[in-house]
Length: 200
Image 1 (cartoon, rainbow, N blue to C red):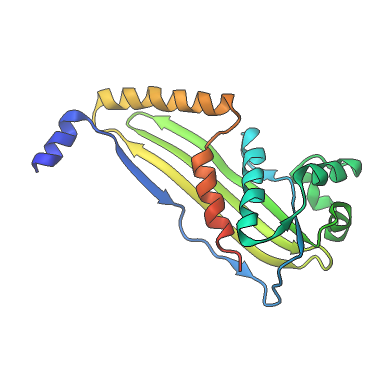
Image 2: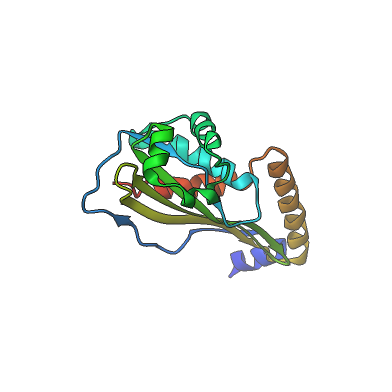
């Protein structure tokens, strides 16, 4: 009781970390590890332009932990540009076989940035990232693996003074992240880690 009164009196921020609700992970019965994987440009369902670039790089980096040989992102983008593709959302119009040939990869990692946002209102703030990814055999077009993961950081202030202070802090953090093109990096890292961990 004493500790509870202290928290209320001091207006200490209560931090809550929680992953998104458990999601289904699909693994093909004929799953096999591709020799070389191309991490394709992300489809973006959010309003953030930096998010897909950041998350794609994190996916590329974390695949190394699972011992995948990865095609360099610069080579992938150059090959796609040569065939008129500059955005992840356009890739639905291309056959996996063609993408595999262009990128010299036998595995294709498609991904979608589903949520990537800040919320900072009143006594509550939230930072949310949600990613969906699919590994496809470039030769057959078969989906080998599919998963969806996310991460949320959120906080609740226990006094008006603390709410005002945290509002200013969160706005400053958001501005700094935007300036360095690293928005929601901690949440993105956690979401990518959890996503890649579901690979066989």
